[in-house]
Length: 373
Image (tube, rainbow, N blue to C red):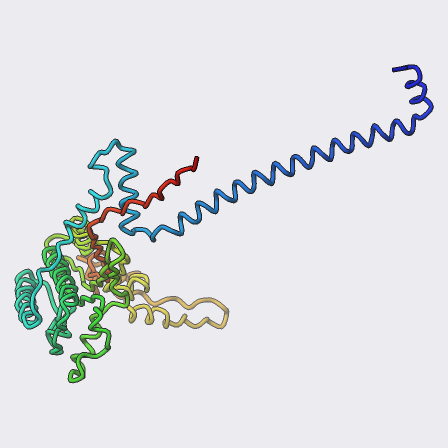
């Protein structure tokens, strides 16, 4: 190849040579950009496929805490902990479910006598401990004790009613043992057979209305596909000062006792109202004292714009008069002392009962297709 001729041709065609070099450089840069875009597209497609696979797997799972998810979580924890049974979620749920002992089944005719007998025992125990109760208190079951409603014959409904009654009995004994001043009300969730506002068609009037007030707004949550069921209750009681304890200390003991029960209770809300709320809001004065203090008019001014000489307070020494021997100070009214008032308490508490966890079925493995030879 004659390099002299090639160099001479390039020298004579400088513009063409530069154009060719620039074109080749632009083509190389464009090829590089296309390769980067293709690589990014391949990476994005792979990430999208992975996320779609995760989404499909999440959609296939049941909502937590479904028994299948509990078993999956239990197996995962057991694998990470070296198959330690103490760290197994199934073992934990087994212990929780053991604390939720189901009520012994009874027949419908035996339900009302059982309520009457046990409620009478609670009333006698409350009177013995000096705990006040409203007249004809139904402990959340006034629909059956006072309104005369017949219990349903459905065995599942009777089991739910018995579970509610056993829980209310335990909560009532807890309040009585802590010697609250008064139990003002107990409410529970409606069962399926109690959805009507009044009782049976033959029950009406004030007794049915009073029984209707014994139900909470929160519903009973009992779904067979879930690992737990929730039974809400509302306690309305008054704490006073007794047994060298203040109302605050008694309330503290009640809340601490809820955490020590074998049942799994969750305190949702606590509402407190002091018996001297109006006096506290008035700054330590009664309403009559507050309004009387605001209605006192200022003394009139003298013509020269000065205040008139104030009259001496009753009992104050008069100038020029012989002094009197000092004696004990007498108060017309007692000074209010806060911290000794009673407290009206309303507590919303949920009873959570766990069912026994069941093992998840093994995933089906598709048979491998044999390759033909």
